[in-house]
Length: 75
Image (cartoon, rainbow, N blue to C red; front, top):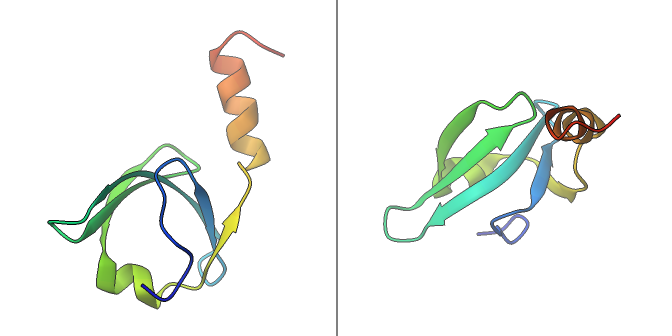
């Protein structure tokens, strides 16, 4: 893979689509990466498609942090 090294638990920003993707699983045998977007939707991306994306490693989106806090009873 030419882009950022894919690691479970990391967030990536797709600069072209302006989407945040959270990696929930990397299946080397199947050649797919399971991701969750900032809205909670889960998708599967194959390695070839991942390579075509304009991705950068990023921190957790603020909207996601707020959602996590709300779910945990925080402010």
